[in-house]
Length: 237
Image (cartoon, rainbow, N blue to C red):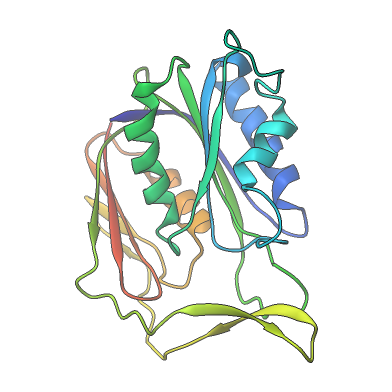
């Protein structure tokens, strides 16, 4: 699979997602002594961001802001593949699985994983504390190794979702939560960690990797999203 060479995270606060992501990515690359030209893949995962329906993938914004291989396209030019994935709070694990599958196919050595959300607009109720998490992943090197990602939808309740629509009175897109449930609290043992079910994916990743840094053996990260769907990332030190 892949190795996490370095990572950085921060609560988003009032700052914009792009600015925070660029700062964290720059810091993570400097810590791991990685050259921008060696980045072959950028994957962003999240649920909320401004202008979601009208702008291109957020990963392409990050590529442009970092100026990674933004050159004239020729047969000889090197490329960086940038795209987004979105699967509720489990998005980060879907992105990790995609990176593990795709990175061996590229000539570049490294991938950037960016996980984050921002309040879409003032009209959307926002009970979250968004975090931005950025990591540098490689096929080899020092750091925790992702062994596999597994998916379990047996307890998923599709009706328990957050849906967006255009509110004609507010003249803006708004998000509404459907379906009542009792969210699962934080759960932690010596072998695994699962964050609060109401967390967004950036907060899930930040909380887990803070704990993983202190581990010397296998440690599993489980994310249970609002519907009850579960993803598990299995890491080895």
